[in-house]
Length: 360
Image (cartoon, rainbow, N blue to C red):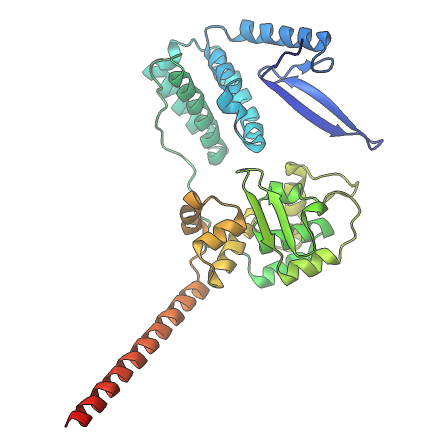
């Protein structure tokens, strides 16, 4: 009999022989499951992991974390978002896992959690915010499911504040990077500056997504299907590459880039090009800014960048650089409008004068 099991992570790994191995893990505990899905061996190993999970988390915060990460809500998150939660939940278990459920509803727990937040913030404000946000989401879900009555972290002040609206790559900086960087990073630059795709989508972009004129894919974060025409610069670059594998970007060993390896390579090449203040994500802001300068509307930019229409305006407002080019373009539009209005008024005045002269 086939049994549908939830809370299983499937991991695929490419072998040196060229084949692909598939491994299964119990999501809540991280335990590796033996056998293949549907076999008795697999069901036994899953049962052992479930029992260990229950024994570990009964009556404490571990139980609430397990409730969250085995929920339908968690399953419906994008793969990238679920992956981002893994390290956060492990940190939360390590610090607060044995705290009794009754205790997490007390004001003292809030005070302790905020103190933890402040301490973590001394090393990384963004990381501290991410961890406390994850803890708050666990408590929020527990309250939704009536496991607790009070979420003491329903609000808190974030430590990290960033506005990178002015962090835009100039043409000179891009040219310098292209001269110094390794070929795979150069390709990443050309794709990002011409399409605004997220790093994960670029790292996993297959050649099959490119038909010679357009790039078609479903974004990893929102699942939105986008079809982006390639500007001539990107088309010329891609057409000049040798297709040595399935993906457009591969390491020197022909494998897909992992996030950390990609970031390390990008930073190394930025250092070679003596570019310190800018990161890869800023290339996306540069792409949005270029589109805005060219006169693209908010719906156009949202469609190209893979943003939802509901959040496009907010994202563009907070990230598109307020620079002299945009200001100049706006003034040029204003001047053209005034000139058209002046011509229209002059034409009406002349027409009125002719009519008046004729009447007289």
